[in-house]
Length: 350
Image (cartoon, rainbow, N blue to C red; front, side, top):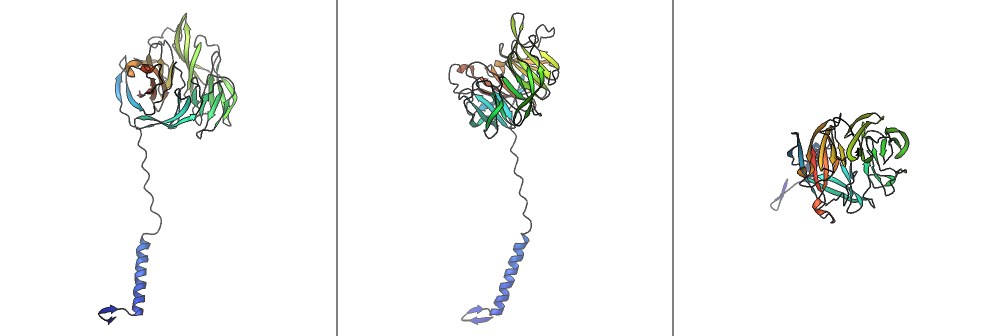
């Protein structure tokens, strides 16, 4: 070290050594943090939808849980006459036929609200269109009763080119079943994204004692459930016919002349939802929701729809998860209007 004019100076060799020491120290410090990248913290999972359920006691003592949801985007399924087949679900995406706009929209449950994610997923859809899915794509009937398939990206293609009232995918299989007035319920194979061939008859055409006028069809992968009305003498009554996919009759609820029909009597069968363990039937003629055991069709309980759904009684149902059912109910006070408040939305849990 030398002192020049009151300040300390360092000779060149000393300065070079000090510089090298500093650089080595810095490299060591930085090297300690090098090596493999520290794994990222896993992203927190999106919390499951939590709803505020209330307990409701049914007529014969059974209880179910009911939650009210917000119809954030004022969805309206039906303007006038009740039509089933208005909702279907693939994964977390719900497809709904919206009568106000003549479209099929995409929606999801977020928190306690039903929210539209794509208001015009399919355009120019008739109100009579029957919605379902094959586990991959949305299926719907167009104005000429032909079945169309729509992929998640909105790409549309013909799925079945013969007239049917509706077609329902068979969960877990590359198959579908169809129904139409005065025709058999038929089972088909699916290949290359469309119906390829007929497999067989599930419910025969000669079913006058079961159902003269079918309204809809649902399938849980094991059985097909055809529902609608039939004649008991001169009186029209409701009926639900459950058949295995090989064509074996399991049971018929509301069969005319059946000695044990009550207390499971149906005046009509406007809509049906099949959950893991139960079969729910909306009896529109007497505004009543009936619950049956899916396994054998035995009666469980019932409740008046207007008591359950805030005085409203035009009910559309869709199984959600487990023994939950998403319900959209027409606001009857808005008949004759454009439905500016939208339908009321509920979730049932049995």
